[in-house]
Image (cartoon, rainbow, N blue to C red; front, side):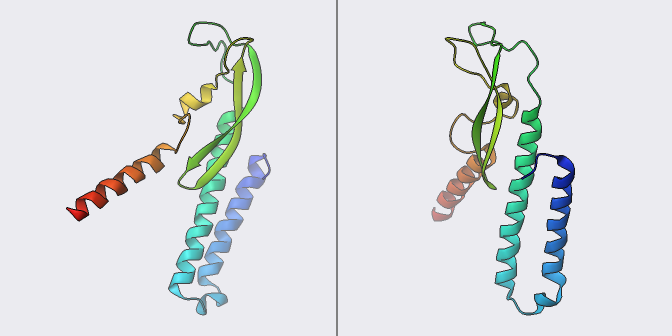
Length: 142
C-alpha cells in the first residue's frame, strides 16, 4: 500500500464503486443472497482494515513532542521506529511508530498511550465484544 494519501483515497473510492457495481451490475442476477452478503462482509472488512491502517500510519508519522521522559524522569532523546500489531475486529493491523529510548532504558512509544493501544491482547472493541458475548451467553442459558 502506498503511503501517499491521495492515491489511497482514490483506491478506496474505486473499491466502494466496485462494491456498488457488484450489487447492482448485470452479474448481480445470479448469486444467492448468502453469497452476496458474505462477499460484501469480507470486502467491507478488508476496506475497513485498510482505512484503519491508514489512520495508524497517519498518526504514527507525527513525531512526539519533546521532551519524552521515562517513568523515572530520564529524558529519552534517541529515536527509532518499532512495529506493533493492533488486533482489531477488522483483523491484525501492523504499523511502525516512534520509539524513544536512551541507553539503559526501555523504549517508550507515546502514540500507544495516546491511542489507548493495549500492550498485549486485543483492541478495546474486540475485548468489549468478547465480554458482551460471554455475558449474553450466560444470560441466555439461565
